[in-house]
Length: 182
Image (cartoon, rainbow, N blue to C red; front, side):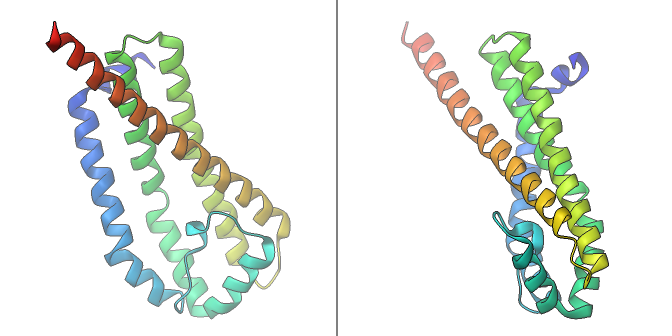
C-alpha cells in the first residue's frame, strides 16, 4: 500500500485520467461501431447494467455463432486491460485527493482495497460471461446470475469513486480558495 501511495500524485492522476478518458472515447466511438457489427447489431454483454439470464441467452442467440466467436475474441483482448486502467485511475486519483486533504491512512487503504475489488469484480463478470458464451446453447443460469452481481458491484464502485473524486476535488478547490483569500 505504501508503494502505491507514492504513485498517487497529481501528475499520475492527470496521466491516468488522460489514459482513462482516451480509452472511454475509443470504446464509445470507434470500438462501439466495430463491436456493434461483430455482434450482429446487438450490445456487448458486459455493457449491460441490469440483466437476467434470459436477457443474456436472447442476446447470445441473436449474436449467432459468428457473433459469439467475435465476443469471445473481443472479451479476451480488451476486458483484461480495461478494468486495470479504470481501476488504477480511480484508485490513484482518490488516494491523491485523500493525501492532499490529509486524510488518515485507513481511508487510503480502504480506497486501495475498493479499487482492487472493482477490478476483480469486472474480471469475474467477464470470466463468467465468457464461460456462458463459450458453453451456449447450454444455459448456465447460475453463472449469469453471478455475473450480474459482479456487474452491479463494479457499477456501484465506479459510482462511489466518481462521487468521492468530485467531492474531494470540490473540497480541494475550496481549501485552495480559502487559503488564497487569507
